[in-house]
Length: 232
Image 1 (tube, rainbow, N blue to C red):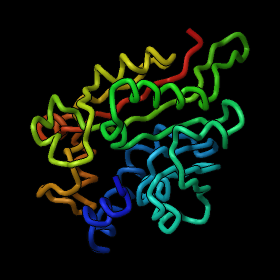
Image 2 (image 1 turned 90 degrees about the vertical axis):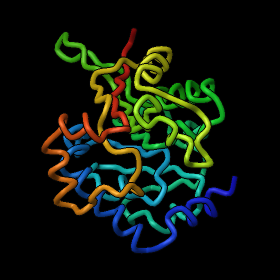
Image 3 (image 1 turned 120 degrees about the horizontal axis):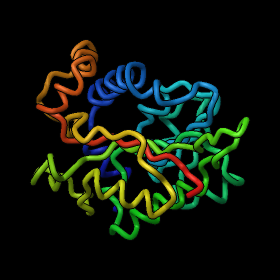
Image 4 (image 1 turned 60 degrees about the vertical axis):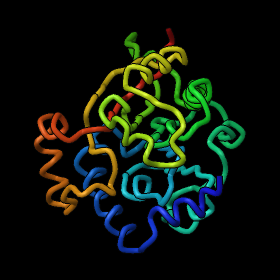
């Protein structure tokens, strides 16, 4: 599938892209940043138009995406690879990443076996567990923002490139198979898509976050999980 053609048609105008970027500015500042160290290494495995990686604060920022447009949209402080994230181990020497961000990507893979393979390759580049003053410190984290078929229902298939049906429990199980343990899970977080008719003014997005988990209970169709690397 031609991802450049597909996403150019799906987010056809600069107005739509600007609106999405404003949404992500609020999400990064008022939600995601608290889970991400500003002195860490952050990798976005499906950066798309770079709304997350451009707006998050980190010492080093890395973006992978098959869409060649990623190079055009990434800020200058982002190291960009116009390649599949399945090939990231050849670019990253050893376990060196603090945070991997995976937003709306796993449902595009070809099978559940490929979902497990994706989580496993992410686990390989996350920093390992450390022992500091006889205290175990867990390693790197994988942050997953994922449409949940349990709450999205039939609308999950409204996008032609959605192939794999996933729930938060399936992702937790897949993570455990790859040496990652869930440390945080919001079953119902954001609405299913930014193309929804829900109000999307930055103030209303901020208010939505302030009203969590109540707002998510009524409108959430995407789950948010943090899977942490363990030595178990």
